[in-house]
Amino acid sequence: MTAPQPQSPRKAAIIGGGVIGGGWAARFLLNGWDVAVFDPDPQAERRVGEVIANARAALPALSDTGLPPEGRLSFATTLAEAVTGADYVQESVSERLDLKHRVLAEIQAASDAPIGSSTSGFKPSELQQGARAPGRIFVAHPFNPVYLLPLVELVPSAATPPDEVAQVQTLLRDIGMFPLLVRKEIDAHIGDRLLEALWREALWLVHDGIATTEEIDDVIRFSFGLRWAQMGLFETYRIAGGEAGMRHFMAQFGPALAWPWSKLTDTPPFTEALVDRIASQSDAQSGHHSIRDLERIRDDNLVAFLRALKDRDWGAGRILNAHDRLLAERDVQNATQHVANETELVVLPSWIDYNGHMTESRYLFAGSQTVDQFLASIGAGLDYVRDGHSYYTAETHLRHLAEARAGDRITGRVQVLGHDDKRLHLWISLVRPGPDGETEIATLEQMLLHVDMAAGRTCPAGSSVLAQVAARAASDAARPRPAAAGRHVGAGRPLPQPEGAA
Image (cartoon, rainbow, N blue to C red; front, top):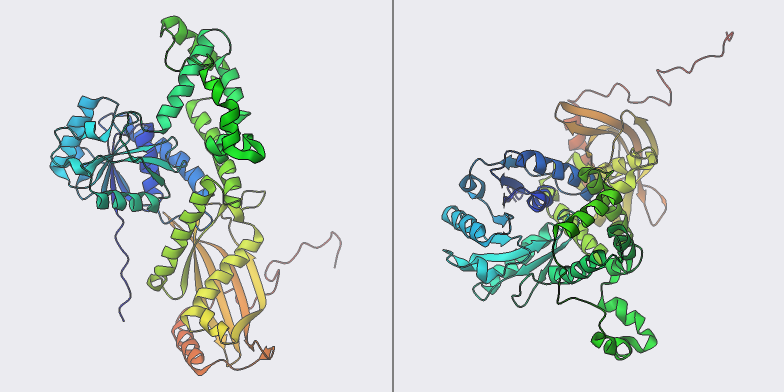
């Protein structure tokens, strides 16, 4: 039976390399897609590179299975070059309808891929005006930072076929997003309409001298912002209704809607004085941080909060757990593509100790994972265990040779040093691939005993397993025997003797 061949990475074209375009590029890239970015601004490559650097430091910390290997990033010199061969195109240019029309037309002249627009306000039917293939254009509106926040508002028009919508939803889930299908077109979709209402009221509070920018932010981040992040608006108000629930809340607070509490249908005069007041207050509030510093602070806080939600499988944490399961299932499906004596691992955040390095128990775990895959390759995997037999580790000697940090990719390799019908003597090498070659970070030497689990004692392995072991041992005999094999703790590195000792 021919083993399945690894699929080539899919390609995403990102048109527009600002904050949102850079975030999209990072989200696709870190989920294994090849990414081509086009933006004529000479600073685009630097800006996108900085956003991706932030994403590399943050997004892997949310995965407990390890993200797939990064795709290939390129910066195209023309829009046509970027979209050629793309499986998906994300348009993230400035919010000008005439500009979007020109860009969308140029995309469709070179590609028939589905096109999502990051527009925060335009409806898909407006974007589709004059398009060659209007049904392939829709709104895919994310929230910043795109590489961490999972929501994307997916807004089709009547011209978009339902199967196209379903395919795009699957594509977005594949990169860990939560595509919320907006059932009717409306200006500014859902999220920005809610944000606009809060923004207008905040502008009035500053305009009228009631609160500063920092005080308004304090109200949000120290109170209802924390509730919203895990429960949203309606679930929060359901609790506010007490045991009687939402109906009681509506009956109690509904009449307040007629009171003149807000100015949501009006905006304060947008004067230079108001702009200066808000800008100066914002500078006083956080001007001592650079924008990149603020982004990293934001990302660190989001990761901590999202991991707390993930541990409880609640809110956005449930989306992250679903993405982990998707990646784990894909690893199982691709297991037959792995070399039998190699195991690919990713250093996860939970593997890191207080020094920022992989903790000792995880070196042992990585070695165990490598041996487990080796045992499966010789026919002593989980099915063999379910039948009542298994190899038990009797002895391990671990050497720490180099440090590993979160996000590092590790390859584990097994060499058979010796065997008989009951024993298996293995050498495991853990290496970290790098641009200048491999670095061996640890070795483990193990003696395994074959056990009848019901009887609780050693016994000869099955004939088919022993045949596989013999074949592997014969193959490994051509490899040099590791110089450190058989070493006891401290051998070759004598401890310093006290002064005056004989």
